[in-house]
Length: 132
Image (tube, rainbow, N blue to C red; front, side):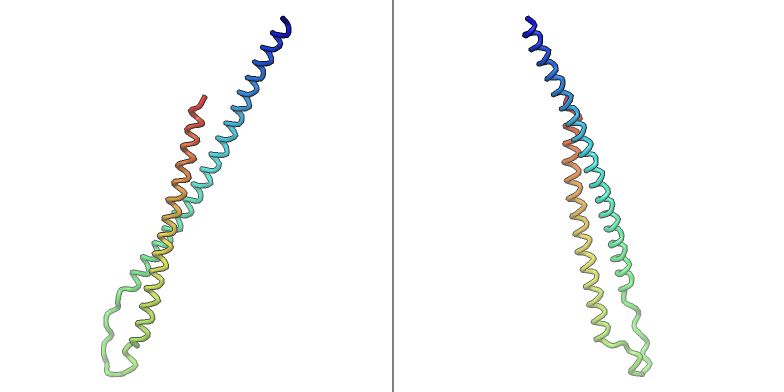
């Protein structure tokens, strides 16, 4: 009889230790997931701030590129701006606006990618929190 009793006690202790280890593993996994979510949120905040700064730079550049009123013609050749200079400046402005647009698209895509990663981690946290 003592061997059967010892056997059942061993089984109970084994189950209890497995449950405790499982709870510990689950808690450790929850902590790792929460740290990952926090890191992603910080990276998202950084991307959001960068997006805002680039957007403001782009707006500022657009405001600066409104065409100035035509210069008064005084009859002196030096008073008129060079067409080539104006064309070069306009091309540079257009290129800079295009770079800003590309950067805005990149930052927006990165923000969305991080949001998807965060959502999957939050789903996993929810699953772990609901399991017994």
